[in-house]
Length: 89
Ligand SMILES: [Ca+2]
Ligand SMILES: [Ca+2]
Image 1: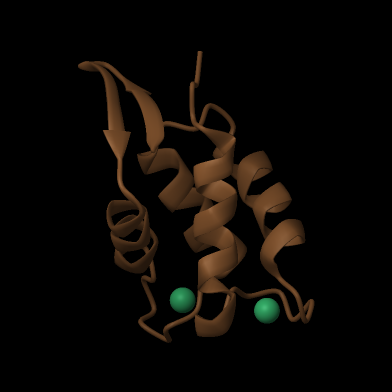
Image 2: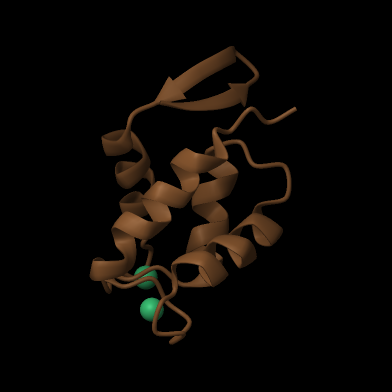
């Protein structure tokens, strides 16, 4: 499970919910996530430094280093987000 600190307190996100957040932030609708879109997604999940978080996530999940998270890299970014555990303080 995945935990996020929000103004309402602590709540948990399932893998599907994380995927939903990432997909919702695919603003140009190309089915891929660039760093800017990632940062917005992390912001929604309660990251304190979304741009930095997106940078690290990109390094982790962008296997072919083309600067975007494509469909086949999606599971890696979801995994990464889950592993963070998101006990954001
Ligand atoms: Ca996109
Ligand atoms: Ca890539």
